[in-house]
Image (cartoon, rainbow, N blue to C red; front, side):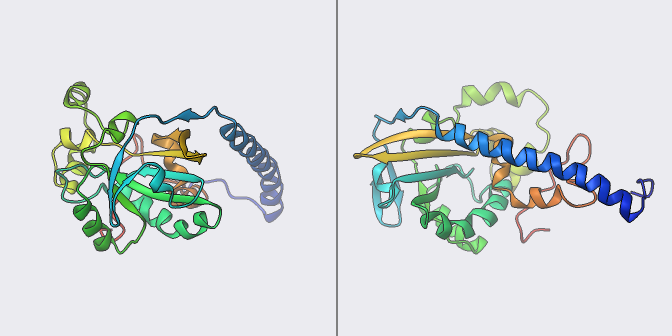
Length: 240
């Protein structure tokens, strides 16, 4: 920071105007991408799934809760976990407050994990959050949509550099294999004439849209300031 370029107000305004043109272009590109997402073909979900909720066992159509659109976040919390993933927990700080606004636009939002419902709800209360969260334990849902993985699928990754995985696994009360067996993701569904269709999905950096603090850090003087290679600095909000 000490060696950063220093200029006059006039120089800053000129550079800011040039950057603003590119920011506006990016906004227009994002609008176009959003339109293209909406035009993706729908995939019918013909398999029946069941989920454990606070109101009893529900099917996929039941999860829409009377609305025509459903956004599902795969929250990393496996059957043997004692706590949820710290990174997923940081995302919860954003989507917990968004639930009411999404409902106002005919969208139901909820999280799905393979952990037992009682564990999920206890952890949610511990975080001080209240977003809808259901368990898919005993169902193939997470596996069918690429959020959960078998031991054979995970095995090759355990032989490589695990980076922050051991620390994250310990934070969840599991081992690296157990942690890597679960993964985050966002999936969109629609309900039409009683039939459920998948319309969109994303994972990895595609989930940054939910991590509002990243957008703010990108506008701070030092940016994300995560180092090279990036460090895994994210913690649960009460653990910094």
